[in-house]
Amino acid sequence: MGRKFDFSLEEFYHLYNRGNDKREIFLDTHDYNRFTMLLYLCNTTEPLDIRSYFNEGRTFVELFGIHRKEILTDIGAYCMMPNHFHILCREKTEGGISLFMQKLSTGYSMYFNKKHSRTGSLFEGRFKASHVDNDEYLKYLFSYIHLNPIKIIDNEWKKNNIFDRGNAQKYLSEYKYSSYLDYTSDAKRKEGLILNKDSFPEYFLQPKDFDDFIDDWLSIKKANVR
Image 1 (cartoon, rainbow, N blue to C red):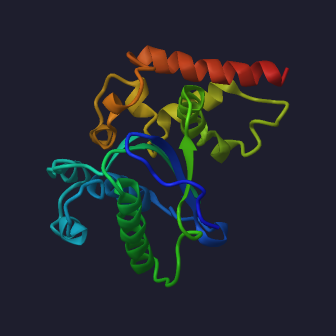
Image 2: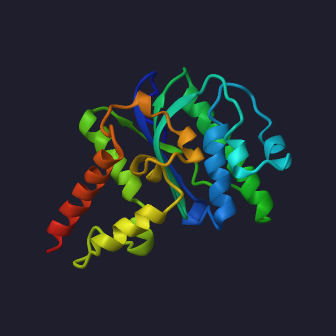
């Protein structure tokens, strides 16, 4: 089924997709790192020979030193899960989101199929998207996307009568495959270059603002399960 909207400049969108037949699309650290790098490298209007960058033997950190000119979309948050991913972004150039996602999905699928000796479609059709048309929804997505990894340790955490808030916070602070750490810590990760925070509302001027925001969401959950 086609989307009921077209992507528009300066509008915000939640993008997501999962593995075909709900299969896992990230099987090890290398897979997560490859997708993370592609989030950075594919976000440019320039044609890139991405395979050459990886074949040159550059380290994970060095790949973030590759200069990009004009970018296609502003990314505010992202999260990779074993069988799906989420991206919160803003259309920066005409057709930017569609081109970015085409480059990202194709580049990762080619890598994954070659590495894991498989053929066929990796993702469940074309990527999905929802239009973020109000401030409340936009801010909510920063919690929804960044809290997603809790499902790995407790898939029914939103429904369970027992919820270990401390364990959830500890797990999130150690999870490397999302932009969570780029909001909670003063330490500047190279992965932070994926984000374009200035294009989003100033919800979190300091790391503590984001910490309090996440803590409030976890507190709401804790209160609801008592």
